[in-house]
Image (cartoon, rainbow, N blue to C red):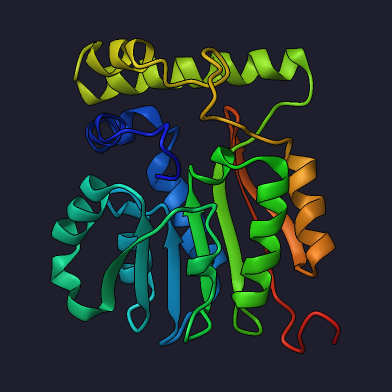
Length: 244
C-alpha cells in the first residue's frame, strides 16, 4: 500500500477478504480492463497492485501487454508474484510508495496506468500531483483508469454509501456460504471509512477528481461505474501531447 499507517497485518486481511470487502470486485476489474483501451504490446502500471487481481485481468484481456505491479507491501508483492508466475516475464513487481516521485520517471512510457483502492490514501494536493505526473509519464494516447473510494458530497449520500457498502458485504457473505465471518471481520477491522473514519483514508469528492484530470490535460474524462461510495473514472492523454 502507500503509507506507514498501512501494516502487513492489513495486507494479510486484504488478501484474505478482498473479494468480500470490495463491492462487485470482479465487475470492477472488468470495467477497468475494458476502459484502458487496446494496449497492444505496451506496458501497464498497476499502482498498489495488491495480490494481483487487476493485473491478472489485464494480462488475460490484453494478451500481448506487459504489466508491472507496484506496491509498498512485501506481502502483497510476494502474493502477486506467486499468483501470476504463470504469465512469465509479462508480469513483474516493483516496490514503491505511491506518494513518492521516484517511480514516476520511466524508461518506457506506459500505455496505461491503473489503480484500485489506493489513491484515496493521498491528500487532495497529492492526488493532483499524481494526475499531473501520470499525464506526463503516459505514452500519447495512453489512459489512466482508477477504481477508488470517493467522498460523498452530502450527509444523505454519505449515509447511503455507508449503508449500501455494509449491506453488500453482509449479503455477499450469505451468497458465498461463508456465514457471517467476512461481515464480522469487516466491522472488527473497521474497514469502511464511511463508518470508521481514520487517518489513512482521505477520499475526495468525485467532481474534484474529474476536474483535476481535466485540468492537467486528460481528454474523455468520465465516470465508468459507481456503487456504494466506490467509483471508476479516468481519461486519455492526447496523442499530440498536452498542448496539441
